[in-house]
Length: 131
Image (cartoon, rainbow, N blue to C red):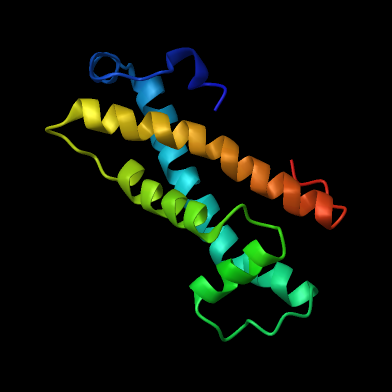
């Protein structure tokens, strides 16, 4: 995020003028943004429910998200689903629509801060240093 910050907000023009290092930084962001959400979905959220002795291991993801919302660990199931949809948009290239790609990347940068807040909230709840 620190390496991308000087280039924010992105536009179609700034995307076209990125040097190789900046392209690599954005590619790394896209990869890590998706992987972080995958890890939360497949590992952290189920582990949290397990620690809380919630019997959700065989339940669909939507049920797990709803339970995490009720426990106050997620703002809302809907907001998490929007983050997941954004992940898919951020990962897509949109070669004929650079302005759209820039807009989705900018939204992804902002969403990363929301994911960080979720991690911090879970860390505080369980006395962990998730930073």
